[in-house]
Image 1 (tube, rainbow, N blue to C red):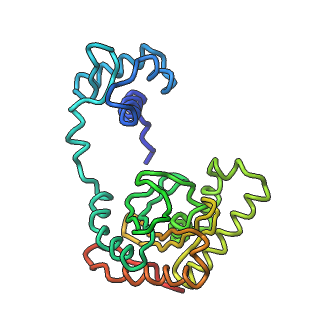
Image 2 (image 1 turned 90 degrees about the vertical axis):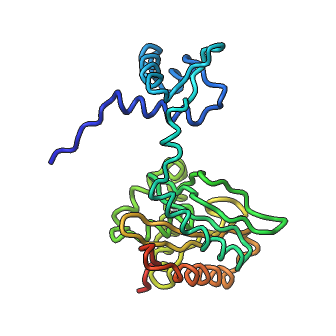
Length: 261
């Protein structure tokens, strides 16, 4: 069966909606939209006019700027399967956070990145700064290494993840070192059930990650802290604690930690 060809007009309209979702409620000028989206003004105007008919986009009568309209409210309120899972996992993230008083993240792969889906902050004066929705290059994070390492064909897939722009911009020696570190983590994932990164994603920060395997989607949970507070023994303790908490997940969530080899 052949792959359906995407409709350019639909793709363009959806891209405009996604773009406006990143802008301020005051709206954005047509010229700015066209330039940012690499469209000519006529195409941008006609697409926005179609979206206005559905009330997905509205135009400020005073400035002429475009912004999202109330027509997207049902979509904005829709709970995706991923959001539902995030809500179900929240109590377990909180348990991990209370147990260790460190920053806890829940993440998922998107393209060659990991996106933070949820987090639990520690009660500490010195903490790691992060944001839900932030994307970071997968192979430089414990979350990404846990998720990639959980693939049955991880060795075949790794090459694609190493083509992330943030990685290819590095020297050949640095790229080789990242690959070595990821492969080393795959071994630890098989033997101990977790991955790590030490100041490879952010200077001064270390993380450990544990994958969570599902029937259609995988997730991973990590703990991050200043590297000076993360000696090897503590990293192993944190990872073991994450696995212990996740092993308490009820069967009807259909999520489980990765079996050890």
